[in-house]
Amino acid sequence: MDAFMQAAIEEARQGLVEGGIPIGSVIVHKGRIIGRGHNRRVQEGSAIKHGEMDAFENAGRQSASVYREAVLYTTLSPCSMCSGAILLYGIPKVVIGENRTFLGEEELLRSRGVQLEVLQDAECVQLMEDFIKAKPELWNEDIGE
Amino acid sequence: MDAFMQAAIEEARQGLVEGGIPIGSVIVHKGRIIGRGHNRRVQEGSAIKHGEMDAFENAGRQSASVYREAVLYTTLSPCSMCSGAILLYGIPKVVIGENRTFLGEEELLRSRGVQLEVLQDAECVQLMEDFIKAKPELWNEDIGE
Image 1 (cartoon, rainbow over the protein chains, first blue to last red):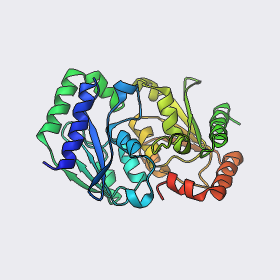
Image 2 (cartoon, rainbow over the protein chains, first blue to last red):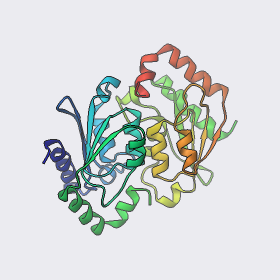
Image 3 (cartoon, rainbow over the protein chains, first blue to last red):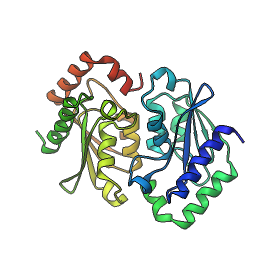
Image 4 (cartoon, each protein chain N blue to C red):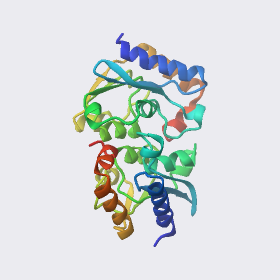
């Protein structure tokens, strides 16, 4: 298992421990994690802090040159909002834990030249399957349904 | 001038007073503002709080049924990230102050069925023209350039 995806999964697990939705993300630049985060809808009553957004926020203000050499790791296929952030900052590559429980805007990202790698990682799938089964209403809220 | 766009402009002006980027937004549901915000890149060192995102966050956790009847007002054409949030939550209508100084993802939004109204408001244009002239590096950072 890729160490960076492992870090994203650790973020997801931390979110679960906090009573939140288990989705985590890290942003990597030149082999170093510059931002990490997890979904904070429950913990902060946040409508915008998906895992990826939390990682962007945690990375802080970066120059365009940093984003353009960065790789974003996320345990789940990125939704419209997070995909939009990826496009805004010109992140060239996204590694996705799984897209079986939710398929985000992968087609849009690819059409804009973002390189995607989907791992279909069993641990990522299990985290989401268990959560969706346990708290379907929270999950639906998180994806605007 | 539409009272809700006026409220968005007030948010933009508040951001400017704080030393920030003058872009504001309000989210309206059934004729009432349920969330308002402005760009907080400078004020909070935030990479994700564009005006629209700040308004979503300020509105808090809302049910899908509320978002689907809401109108988002923003002083500037929404970027990829903010457009993604609009799509995530299924906001059906967006009123845009201007798209002359920056053209966001209007084509994508329209292709997904979002109704757009562009006012080309002189005050919105002036706010951005003055700001971009005064602090071009901040503006470029905000749009990932």
